[in-house]
Every structure is written in structure tokens, then in C-alpha cells.
Amino acid sequence: MARLKKSRVIQRAPSFLGFKPFGVQKLSGEDVILHLEEYESVKLCDYENLTHEQAAKIMNVSRPTFSRVYQSARNKIAKAFVEASSILLEGGNSVVGILWYSCPVCELNFSSIIDEQPVCPFCLSEHVCKVDEQ
Ligand SMILES: [Zn+2]
Image (cartoon, rainbow, N blue to C red; front, side):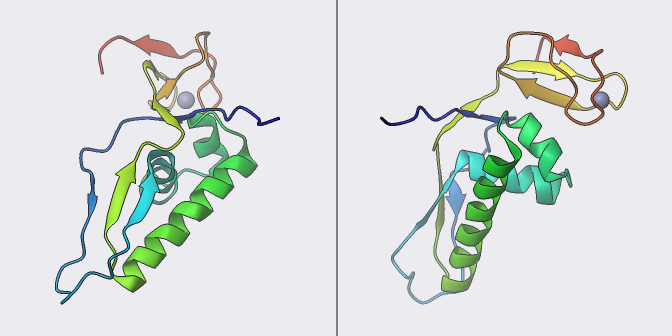
């Protein structure tokens, strides 16, 4: 029986649809499809410099799952980079987080789809507040 895949939480949907290399005579023809959760994993690890553990908590997945998503993202980006392919962003298996929280201890803002008082994924403080507007 097929196992239901858990949705991964994206903090914020990216404001673009993809990337195109420039200066190439002819595109290789094969676009690389990067899923939103893969985009998010690279953003959290390489842009926000979070550990895999922290990023996994933010995305509501286990650490091994996170590592798989992240590795897949890096392989795809490397392939596009080396082969001069376009990158298209697609939904994949993700939801954009709707409940936002703010941690007064470390000032991290994060989203969660778990509708109960969550714990700060960065400092593990339980005293997080819901943010109304994002
Ligand atoms: Zn915190």
C-alpha cells in the first residue's frame, strides 16, 4: 500500500518561477524541475545557515527526510549549473505554512502547520507567540 507522504512546510513561497542561464548559444533543452521543498531546504541551510536539524524542524520533517530533500536539491542545482539548463520551480510535495510564530528569546520567525503551541525550532523555547499578519 502506498504510504501517504507528509507535506513539507515552506516558510514563504519564492517570488519567482525559475532561473535561466545566460550567454549560452542553445539551451540543452532539458529543464531541471526544482520542487519548492528543495528550494526551501537550500534556503534554510545555505542562505539562512541553519543546521539540518533546525531546518528539518521548520519544514516539519525528520532529519533523514530533510537530508534527502536537501541532497536532491543540490544535485539538481549542480546539474543545471554544469549543463546550462533552466531551473523551474514546481510545487512538489509541500504546503506554504499558514500559522506564523515568533520566538521572543532568539527572535526567529517560523511557520508551523501543527495547530498547537509549537516549540521554537532554533532555541527550543516553548514561549513562542503567534504572529497575526505576515
Ligand atoms: Zn527561539
